[in-house]
Image (cartoon, rainbow, N blue to C red; front, side, top):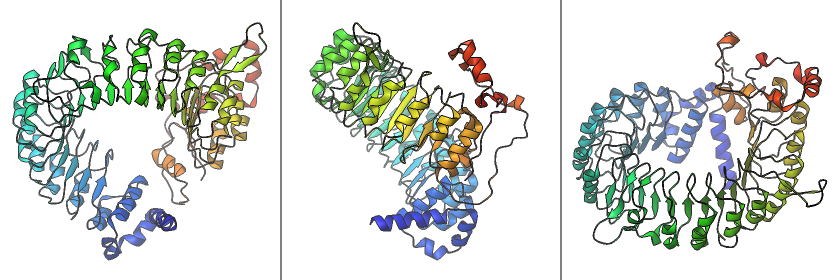
Length: 590
């Protein structure tokens, strides 16, 4: 099967190599009509990714493709839709963020008998007139029309789509009256009403949807939410909350509760009617929650987000009580220190994701983190971590605190941006053989860091930003074969030639730097995909004056890192011969 999959992949790549290769096979219509659906969809996706798909080419797929995802494609318009309307077995159509789609463009899909899912999210030109087209598709089961031009009157028209189980009305002016008109949609399981105009009175109407399991009421005026017997996931972010699930009958089997940015009028009453023992996810980030006793009964909790809140070391014991099943814990921007992290040790055996960014933790916390054996993802950005601790009574001997992370055999991602780590402090990371994502952003890092990290066998994404990397250092860097993204933003000593040579030597790596930020999308895609196509590509227009280029919102003068003598030495080095005004986009030679 692996050989067959590899053969199929190569065939699809060859078919999508260039416009000429497309022309060779597009006329074989009968063969394409017999192509299995999953292969047709793979071929179509590759054509779209390589910018080789155009409206008339869609015709060859009309008997084989069942799902089409065109989200974000700005070229999609009425002409594209005219061809899509002829697709015999089309089941899913995603047009999200296709800003040229309007009411008339939807007309070709009117009455399609196989279509079950349509996504028109953020197609702002679609209005109530477009809804009149959509309601002719009686087979629709899932519909997304968030942030479109549809009004409350248009929402009311959707009542005729009796098979709907998923309905996204986020950002639309849905009123209590228009929500009441949707009572006929008894199959609804998923309803998104964020930013709507419904009130507590309108929230009572939701009891008429017996199968509703997911509900989003974020950014609404609902303060008291009634009991819904089938509800499993509720989002009341940025709401003012009096009570949740208040009412008679069996308590809802709530599994996920998101109240990010919410204001709790009475914390005890707000959670009084919730069956907290069944919760697996709780997000109260950026909320007014200040009493954490509510956590005590949440023994099934796996995901807990307390970021940007009032949690401190004195409340960490409440997390200890429910730590047995915790897999994700976010304490970023809280008052937790290294002392609080020490309290957690031994009580979170299943913890995989720990975020402590923008907290007061220091290197002492690393020794505690190293005792959490299941950790895979750690965020320590913007903390007081230095990477070493001076031994008492001496200034010459230091211990690298990152050595503690060597105990984490499952560690995959580590974020140390905006810390004070130096090159020698990173040596212990070379033993983290499963590390695939590493983020560093520090002015004290040099070429030595690149050399050290080249030994990580599974590294796929590496960020080394604002570092003092040189042309020689980048040239000598031999990236792991797995590396796909190298972010060097803010490394000001690197030249255009150095980056160009690196791209030529390692075309499989997407490099990010100010010099290449204006590289055209087409060129970047080809570089990332190791394309061997010899077709001519249109590059960006360089005939504009440099004075017309957009300026960044802010910049940091990197000369502040050096004293006067060092600056004078750099002035006459080969690295300084290129004027910063000459820096522009570089085109990789493939």
